[in-house]
Structures are given as structure tokens and as C-alpha cells.
Length: 448
Image (cartoon, rainbow, N blue to C red; front, side, top):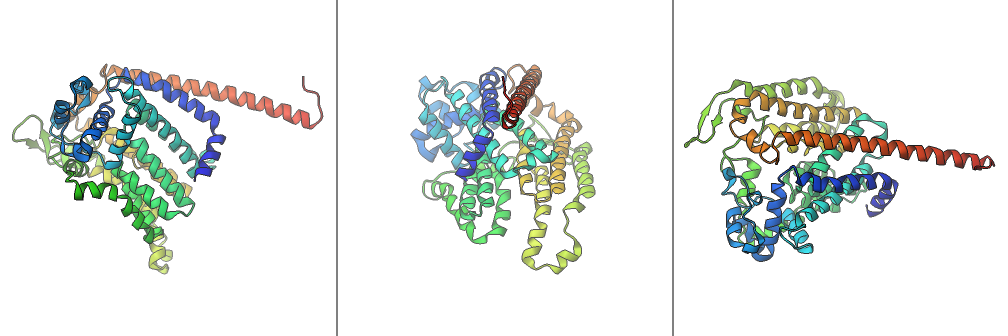
């Protein structure tokens, strides 16, 4: 894997330099427009880890703000969750906590440049992810539109998650892509161990576990070995993971808010916020996103179903392999189940596209991811009376200049795209000139 990464970095060196330049410039710019609450909280908990160890899982944001040294000045509201989540203890998995603890240890200095340092590390990881994606896609990224769509989509998503968001997704994705590269090389034990670390960073990558387990059941032991990182603190150190479980299950104990435009539960029980006890009302338009998704799936799912005769003639092991594309294609539907799905969650499952062997199925999967994103956005409009009552204004408040920030982000995106096009045109121009010179020299012509 290391050799493949080194060769791919050399192959993509010019593009990576440009990507690093764009990402690095985006870090300070994004701090002018976006409140990076997740990064700030993880910075605070990373520092607190060196004082309380895994005991931070038993503390809320307010507990830490009250107990940590006053000179760290964590009283700023951007270092804690909003008030409607104020009593939640630390909810990120163990490997994510350890990552931020090590990062803050390497570059101490609360309220200084430590936040930018965290973004920069995530930017480096994000660019490594681009290398890993290139390894997994191979020549497909040049030959197939679906691969180009995924690569460009991941670039936009990863840039936001790392430079503008300071979130853990680049780390989880990096470990997931590494696991898939190791799987591609036949190193299933290492792949399972790495996947386990990814799950302990962000849980969504667990959807890959059944696929790797089917291919090499015995290697699953390494997945569970890696989970000792979480099991040991829970079993022997009295660590409380209640908020992590509540966040994963999206129960009302985590938040009374529903921020998922796809969630069909709004049909029978749309909550009236700020009522105690919480009151609910029926809202039939909440079912529209589900109807859109179900209609799309009924029309497209035959492509992922195995041939009936082939399926019946195959053994049980071959039948499982034949059902893999269907399993992958069904996974985005899980986003309808959870109450708490932020917009960037919609791209969590997009990396599964690299697991398709059939290019038609891969292209269809990218269309499905797009449809789910459309249904999510349309669901916000369908449930507009509820979302405008709390969730949408709270989300907009994370942008320092409110709605106007969206225009600034679009402008940054357009300038970045224009810069890339100019750079690519100039780079290809130089390559064409160099190729012509080499061809002329081979013919024995004098080049002046």
C-alpha cells in the first residue's frame, strides 16, 4: 500500500500541489465565514484528555468550560453545543478523540493558531484521500463519467469537511479508503483492522464490514481486535458512552430536534418546539421525499438484482456475492431512518461506489446519491413550517454572516474552479510544447 501511495503521489504531484494550495488558502478564509463548532469542541476535549483521560466521556461541554483553566478561555459559546444540546456528554468515538488529543499535544496553544493547525492536518489527510481514491479508481477516473463525478464531488465535500469544517470525516474516510486499498491487495486482516479504526472515528463506515466479512470471515477477528480501543475504556475505566449511543440511534434523549428532511416520522409526529411536554401534529407532505426515493428505487433496482436462473443455480456462497451490488445500492436508504442527519451526512456513503465492478451499476449509484440529496433538500421545503421554527435558523447561525455567507462560499467555489481551469490549461499547454520538442529531437531536428 505504501508503495502504491508513493507512486500515485508522484504521478499526481502537480494536481496535489494545486489542491494543497487551494485547501490551505481556504482555511483562513473559511474562519471568516463559518463557526467551526465541531473543531472547537474537539480542540477543547483534546486538551481535556490530557487532564481527565477517557473521563471526558462523562463530562458535558459546560462541565469542561467550568473546570478547565480560566486562561484557556473556553467560555466562548463557539466551544460548546447549542443550548438544545447543552446536557450532552462527549459523543464522538474513541479514535476521533485520540486524534485530536495527539494533534493538540503536538501543537499546544489554545486560542492561538491551534485551530488552524487542526484544519491543516485535516487538509493533509483530505489530500491523502484523493490519492487513495485515485488508487481505487485507477484509469476509471479518466474513462468514466461516474468516476469523475465522484472524484469532483469528493473534492468539494472533503475540502469543506477539512478546511472549512474541521470535522472528523476526512480521518474516517482515510482509514476506510486504506482498508479498501488493503482489500484490493489481498491483505484482509490489515483491511479489517483499519476498518475497525475507521468505525471508531465515525460509525458510518461500519456498512463496509459485511462486505469484507463475506470475502474473508476469519479476518473479522482483526476488526474486533481494533475495537478493544473502545471496549477497554468502557469495561475497565467506567467510561460512559450513552451520548454516543443516543447520537447513533438519534433518540429524543440526544435531541428533541429533527433535522433530517428525509425523515418520514415527521408525517405523524412533527414536534412543536419549545413546548413542554413536547406537542406533535400530523404533516402529510413529510412523506414526499420517501415517495420520490421509493419511485426512483422501483425504477432502477432491477439493474442490481441478479439473474434469476444464475442465482438459483449458484451455491450459497455465490448467491451472497451476487447480492453484494443490491446491498450496496440499498445502503443510502438508511438515511431515512435517523432523526439527526446533517446535509454533509448525505455524502457519507458515496465512497461505496468504488466497490462496484459493473460501471453501469456504479453510475446508477451516483445517481441515487444525487437523488437522495435532492430529496433531502426538497424535504426541507416540504416541511418548511417546522424547519423554519428552529432547525434552519440554528443551522444558518453557524455562518457568521448568515445567509450572505452562502453567496461568499459560492464565490470562493467559482474562483477556485476558475483558478483550476486556468492552471490546467497552462499545464497542458506546457506539456504539449514539451512533447512536441521531444518528438522533434527524436526526428533529429534542431530545436531553437
